Image 1: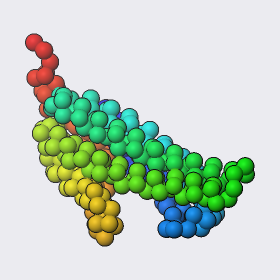
Image 2 (image 1 turned 120 degrees about the horizontal axis):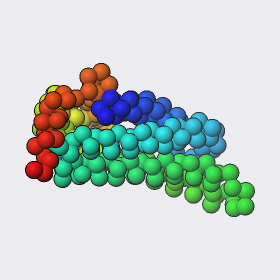
Image 3 (image 1 turned 120 degrees about the vertical axis):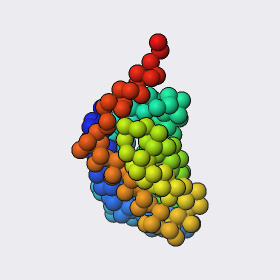
Length: 223
């Protein structure tokens, strides 16, 4: 399970970085809906490819979330459920943002509505996508904090991975204030990337301490 989670986690990281890079080429021009629509049209193929990459990454991380729940429910079932809920909530928010980006490409191609109205629709969709990204990062920050705590308590994974995840979570919580997060970027996002990459590589290369996991599992089985 741990190595499968590691493979899916790696796919998530690679494809989400690719997706964010591609969708980031399309910019919201504040106060100028026509320029925003022109940016969408100019980058439409890359934007759609980026959305597809992000949706694939989300699917991978849904599977990671379920596998991590199975691994960590032996530590604390209730907290593991909360961790899973936080992760799925963040993923749902990000998915709404990705679908808004895709909808923006459809809006600017509509021919039966006047240009200014279409431009405004596309502008609003991209604005929501940006907000969804920030809201999702806050929820994911809380998820990282809780997952880090579970890792520290687990005994079948190194505590340092848990500490890194909690530091990453704290960095992502700066997105509670988008202006502050923008000023701190990339230093506020780097700890989360380092933590997730470290956890991914550990799961891939080493997995979990099976004896310690089985000991925790045995302790939670009804007698």
